[in-house]
Image 1 (tube, rainbow, N blue to C red):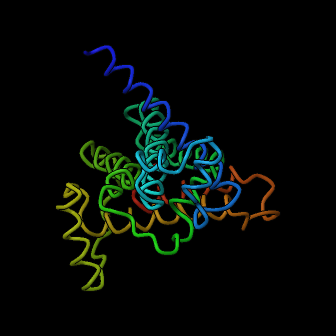
Image 2 (image 1 turned 135 degrees about the vertical axis):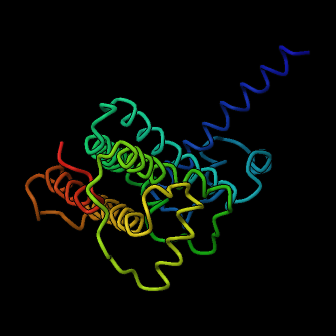
Image 3 (image 1 turned 120 degrees about the vertical axis):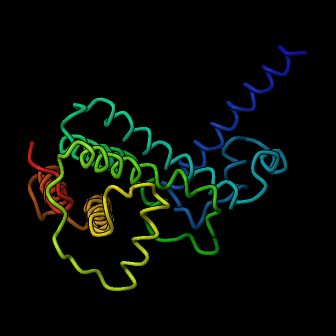
Length: 235
């Protein structure tokens, strides 16, 4: 009984990969808003009803693609962090950010799916939240490690946050389990991540074309400025 079940599971996993690969190819040619289960089934020479046994709707397939993209990005960031020197927190920050850029440049259509324009009519379910926050959680972990090691510059003295931002950021401290950072530093970390992600998006979407001779050098400069912002000392 076990062997046939295992064989079926392997076959299902393989076909699931083929479905996602075909859907990614359609993303590249037609865009996420034109993703079609029928077109994917046609590409795989399947009847649509067969595909529906794997993904009941276009939104289910989109969710699978989104989670897979976030997981691939998170895996790349995990590998970069694992390879970085344990005690050099600025280097760890830089290497995670570089991994984000490298993955995005290599997978522009998947990056666009998760960080580009929303797909009309699609609402991401709650199970995308965990994968979506993996990289950000890693960067917060780097800052927390640096804080506990006494390797963060002193917190901005007397930095006053607008009331609404202070309340929201204070709530996030507990939710994200990063109380060691404090509200002002967490807000700076959020700002830094949006700037790093924005620099990646500007490059991937072609908005920096012709501006710099070396996009990687510009990106590294941005990452270092953001490391300064969050208080990571030079290596």
